[in-house]
Image (cartoon, rainbow, N blue to C red; front, side, top):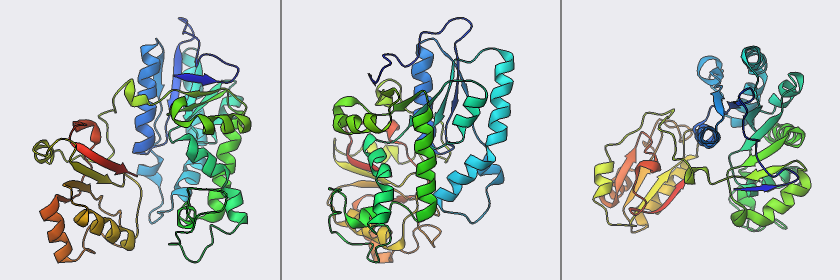
Length: 338
């Protein structure tokens, strides 16, 4: 663990009257898991952990909205009053040391200030991701976001190794994305500190740049899974039947491919992944979440002959997610999980 800034420790050791910490993750699998791991790290240090979870997506999310920026901005509007009431009620019971919220919940800094509570924010992605987000207004100015050829392999000038097609795909909602980034960065800079799920040796140059822009204490405490494994909780029903097949594969031989619990891809991208796996020459396990291919229910866009080739090479697309934490690391050769 490494701290950067004028503060050498994440939190002082708890006292009997100041040992409760409230955690508030975004309600997405890739954000919930790191927050739960951070909760375990803090609990091991003697803190009492309270986790607040939003039910807004499940209960009140407008139907037909697939834009992630719309979802994030919707959550930041709808959660203000319930979150403030929740924290205020907890404060009536006994003192709270601080709030730790996902950086994507940018509304929480105003709540923390109003209730006179210190707040730390957690960024679950890499430091490099923050640098890319910070460059988003420049991407817009240079026209990268509006490029007509979204498949261009041309290097983005000044942003190597990013290609123009990489930048084009950062957002489907140009103005909404910029507003979201500005709001998120404003909260991060106003917070009492930023926690990153990474480590100094991996991203030291990026950390130096970020510290110049975010002059609050920042902590590279990751990777969290080295301290505590991924929680067994899942927003999607998991399919464990393929683990028997996986156990029969040679060590370091199998590719695992998944696009997570929220991401969507186009039919063209889906076809590209399918052909790549069919031709790669290794056994593979491919998880395709129903509805993750835009315009299709599952894998019906794949030709029958291609599906047959996929079945010959590996485990054909599974509907439910199989979490890598259950897989012996000696079995998998490579993996990507977006």
